[in-house]
Length: 156
Image (cartoon, rainbow, N blue to C red; front, top):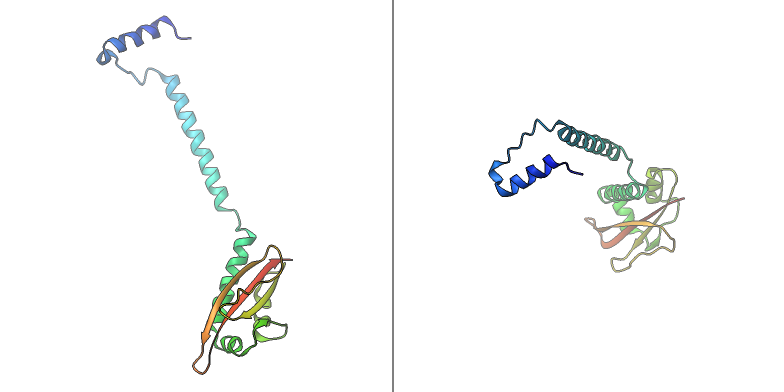
């Protein structure tokens, strides 16, 4: 509840707005509460900022980043490009240069499947929760047989 003095100040301010002189330093309790609230918000914001900064990337981001890196390396490596351009369409079987290269570089706890497809083929795999990325290998100086290399990766 507001006391009589407070009501008189409000009434005087309404009648004559210029007569109300705010003495901000005289109301120390109000300023103290404002500063406490502001400081509390700053502390909470700082803690959240530093905690969110330290959160490790999710497994989804890790898989997609790994797939993108592997595809870029395949596209830039001449021997792997030639292998892709000369191989048959379909699922890559174990023991070849491409399969070995990818299996050596994926993090433990993940499984991978590689497909070499035509450009029009959607290259699907029948699994759930699979992350897939692809790249197109178009040609070398001798051969023009564009192929799509698609990597499917999932957690074991």
